[in-house]
Length: 122
Image (cartoon, rainbow, N blue to C red):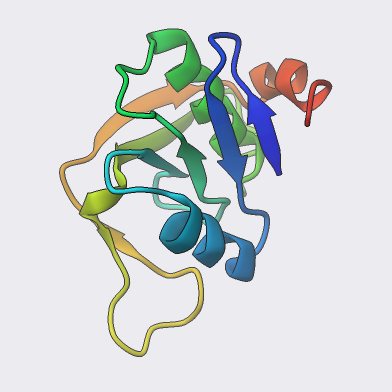
C-alpha cells in the first residue's frame, strides 16, 4: 500500500511477508527510513526520503501506520522502531519478511491516528 504524508512524503506499507520483502529490499533506498512495531509481528513501513530531512509529523504518521498494521492494533500506544534502510539486513536462510536492524530509535504512536491516512490511500 502507498500513502502520501501530510508533508508530501511517500509512505509504503507491506501487509504480508512477501510485500515486506519487496518494499524493504527492492523499493527502499539505503537512506530511506524503515519502521516496524517493536517486538511484535507487523508490517514493514518505508518513508521515501529523497535525501531530505523527514519532518516529525511525517515520521509520526508512518509510525501510526506501523502500529495500526501490527498485532498492537488495538493498543492505546505502540512502540515503533525506525532506522535508515541501510541498517536493515536479512540473515541468511531466514524466512521471508524476517530482518534484523541496528541504530534504531523508538517512537510511541496511537494506531487509531492512522485512520486519517487510511482514508487517503493512493
